[in-house]
Image (cartoon, rainbow, N blue to C red):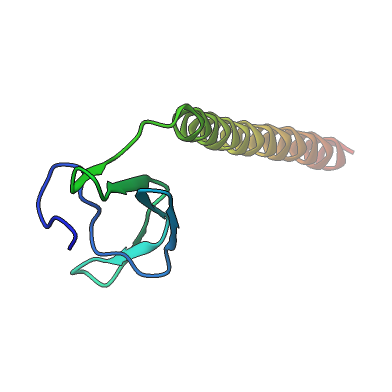
Amino acid sequence: MLAMGGENKPPPLIGHCLVVYEDRLWVFGGHTSAKDGKNLFSDRLYVYNFKTHSWEAPFSVGNQKNKQTRRKKKKNNQNKKKNNKKKKNRRKLKINKQKKKEKNRRRKR
């Protein structure tokens, strides 16, 4: 029987992968249903040890690195969008200035 308590016990998951290998049960991924109706996706790995009847949550360097990489990419994309908006605004201002100059020239004639 699986232990019910413990710090590293996984939350109730739907759509996860589960593998039994030797004396351990490996659980990865899936998602939980939050009370507000949003699904929270998991990228964590949980391991249940049948000998010690305890859950483990091994630390994976790859997960942390991927999260950091995703954050950096997201931040870079946000910065690019801001810069693109600034460039568009500068172009619009430049075009508007040119149009005003042309109107003034036409009026003077």
